[in-house]
Image 1 (cartoon, rainbow, N blue to C red):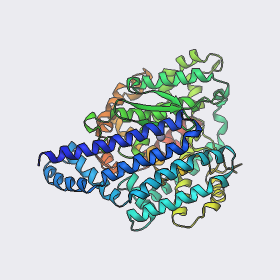
Image 2 (cartoon, rainbow, N blue to C red):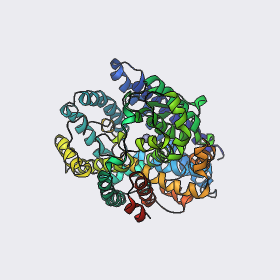
Image 3 (cartoon, rainbow, N blue to C red):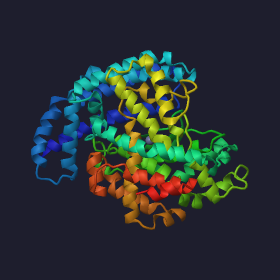
Image 4 (cartoon, rainbow, N blue to C red):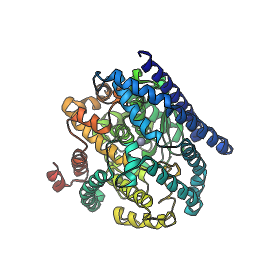
Length: 509
Ligand code: ZN
């Protein structure tokens, strides 16, 4: 009997090795692999994921889980072993419902679709990508049906990514956000002149930017002994284990925000990975709690820290030394205002904090409509443009700046976009608690001290990995479930100050 848990951990360790080997291949595909490698690479990835899946859903794992459940029955809920068995059981039951052929097909379809999405995006021609997206929608429906759902297919997919959250709950959150954001956007529009961000487009040497970004994230706490930064079209972070957590960035001479904030964002994910307890390594617990909680860390570091006035009071003098020409005549507060300028824009990843969630809401609605058969893939660009006009107020000029902008629909997994909005909400909810635990946080940031903040996050969030569902984690840490209220209060206060919107400041709760 005492061997049961060891045997279970051995198998889970092998499954984790297979996934991580796949991650190395993924990283390579996104950074250095020549175009010609796509076909072989997609086969390699689908083989690895199928082997890992078969290993995981084996009858032996089922038997070991049965026995292990008895063994851990009296252990505390948050103990490593009880959590391991509980979370593994949840995933085991879900994964058993997915036939291995379907899993291999999902990986293959994603990897095959990607170059067509890239080409379609380059040429701003949706029809090149449409057949692959059609296939992906079909596969998502198959997955939802295999997993089973009571009300809506989206629930089945969401339950895999954000366990405990339902589509209806998400709709309610988005509705509350929309009610708060739309009038705020309108108010900001009336005060648009209050912020001039032309400084960001004065030309910043790309090599210096990349170096500066890496130095900055190292100052925040991203450990370069266990990390590195490369360039990719779409920035991402990826972990091969506690000792190797990588980030990528991209750089534009003519827009400062892209590289630095992209790097801080990915380093936020990276610090989360680097902080997960080594005791959980090579188990299903070694990762962030969910995509939404992961995103809360990238957004917390990127926005709540990196786009704060305290941050720029500390970093601006060094930035001006690095880029004396473009920053001539600019001060810390002016730069802070510039990097926070809010205006309707086409591209989600470049959107400011206020309008960002509208971009996510649009994708959430379209995914639901496609899954529920209310929207045909061929009508997607038109539906996109219409919704975009009604939410963000702009006419989409072409598919590249519209429906083709994100890589996500080239992978099969739907229900990933809500994680971005959940990330924003959770980051503010955690920050509210952090501020009550570390009242001098802003002073520390102004002095360039991030150790207390990182330590708090490690202690309360990072080290637990995937032991808790997002809801359980929030209850434990903040004493209440998911709520958009702290985020709404945060943007109202911040943008009220930046744009001089007295009314909204007074309204802030
Ligand atoms: Zn992210």
